Image (cartoon, rainbow, N blue to C red):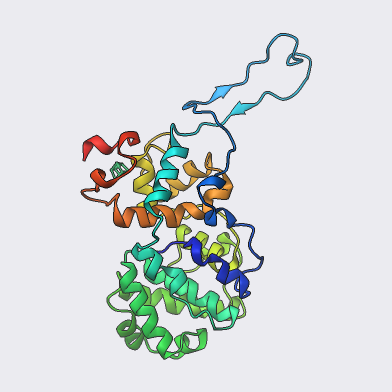
Length: 294
Ligand code: SF4
């Protein structure tokens, strides 16, 4: 499963892979003491501001303010997940997308490799994606090399990634579009990225973060979707990752958008598993609404 790994993010920006250097994801490298303290309230429902007497509310004074909904206990739950992820030893940390591209390649080539590894990673374990990327890189993973490669050879190289036959088709189509329309680079916007065959919203947001060092939204994959529903970090249960993304972006402070993906993906790989989560090992057991059901 693809994710943004905080320990490595500086490498992309520092080598010129991204457009801007580093403020966007600085939060992920922060320790416990540096948690954003946006608010100390623990409200679970939206509360409309009601102007009191003499505060000018009825005379065209300051606009009423509406407190944003946020989940109960989320800061404490987040801290505990950070603690559980302290060793950074989940598959995503060792074989995630940020480990799959050639960091010595020219920036344009690196960005193409980031996009390709994201395309390979859907419905595929990190280990399988990483091995496929290694084979491709040994062959020479550039736009021109992929366009020259016949479909059968490409299929052999990426097998057994999930839906590898479809991915051969999408990779060829997307690569041709990158060559013709984007001068051999990848697009700089989510809107353009999701127009590419085989590229979904999660991949687009991760591509923006990793390849362009620009946080455009929360990358929600199956782990993030599942865990945030279990912890009730969404106001109402959501049915699919895009719905979850919108619900999370509504309240989660923006400086956490980058961190949340890698944090929850690794947590989902190691403890909050899709089936039979290891609640007995989870520091959030006493705060998790889903803990008793497993
Ligand atoms: S208590 Fe269980 S379900 Fe809840 S976050 Fe922890 S592992 Fe996941």
